[in-house]
Picture (cartoon, rainbow, N blue to C red):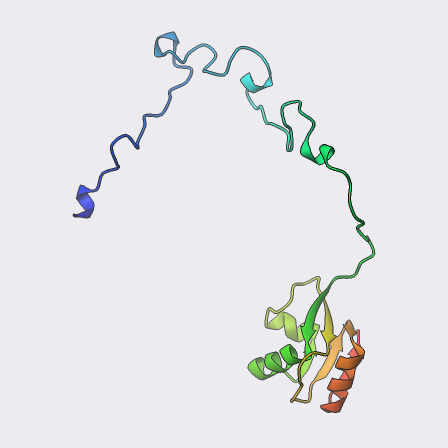
Length: 148
């Protein structure tokens, strides 16, 4: 078998329908779109969630739950993760700027440190939030914590 001898499987390639090219083609006139209505007209676009007049699913299902608009989302790092990151990238300070330079966080993210794992290196933290256990672990390793 050679590349120049490859062909599509028999019956898998179809000719394109040529719409609106005269009555003799069998697809002239309305170009297979029916007679009237939005779907026969140029620029028709079905609305998102439209089910042809049937009650849409987002209206059939009941409302559930609660969304707190004041919730603060954090990018969470455990102390063990911090130790690994500091070791890998040679950081002396664990802060927003340091994490942005190594592309660990996005522009709008806030940082929170949790206390799972061990911290071997002396690291200074400038973060948005830190748990009590994590604060104890950092201070025991000789580091400092500053809340931004």
